Length: 411
Image (cartoon, rainbow, N blue to C red; front, side, top):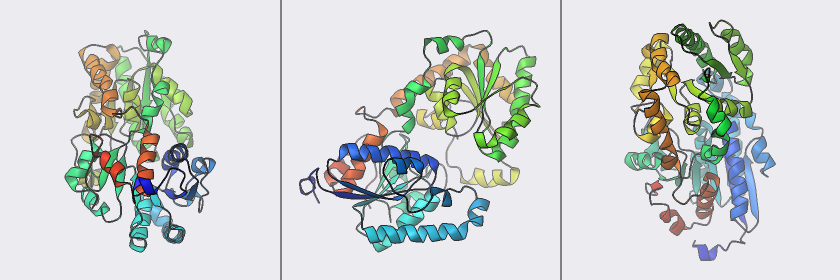
């Protein structure tokens, strides 16, 4: 169908399927942008959490039923997961919406999409958040073509990755963090705190229990070594609420005092005044980078996992800002290199100042340009435009996204 056959006031039915909390947040923003972009009635259904429910999507079942991570957790709940997949597929097929949007959580959402495609081969399917095919299991990109028509990427290098790997059409719609720059950037007073005699050092040992248990002793020894070498700083540790007791217990054994920080607002306040950071690899490194905080990134997995990971990982760095910048501007010390002496040697110059800090500062300032959308749009509006184009079968709009933001071809 063309745009002329789908006037703005035409009713549309959109199915959205998320699988965990971050997808629920993305879905809620997308729903609000869809309502703003489409002047006609919208019928929304699918699977989501509290945020999507508040935006007007009645969930088929509680999101907690499918929001599981890790092989053991999935195995323990496998029967329920398979039932929820079947129920979601059956409900979507019965509804026959104009478009199906799956949001992250590929273990659940891709299982739904592939089964729906077999029963409704003409239904457009949009995947909001690309799986990390550029990092591991790259063959997934080509297999996605069988049941996904368009991928909405959060990272600017992902469209080229899908093109190279033979994946579906892919458009960079922007990372949700670029909508929060005002919350991440320090004001004049906070910027001055970064230059204080005893500035704050942000320490982030991860969000999973296994990460925390593995990295907290190493991070504590690193800070002790820095203090013994004469570095002056205070330590702020944004603690994941569900692991606060564990973090507090492990931090009590550190040779330096620690201020535990709880809640999103206080975490971002720590970022705005922190002079430097020591962080586990993950999305938090992108938050820190956009906040302009020079950092050292560390990570460790058990030896048995290291063999598997080294065979699967396809990228030269595991740090998201490095991947976006196309250079290893942020030092990463992983596995055998994740030791207090090496971490302290990399972190000390960032606290003290000098050439290493200035070089990382310059690199971090380039992130804005690398992540900004060419038309100045925000991510949820950019995503909504493509979802509506897919619902209306508007190939002209989808082809227009084949410029600098998109790559690939519909298979």
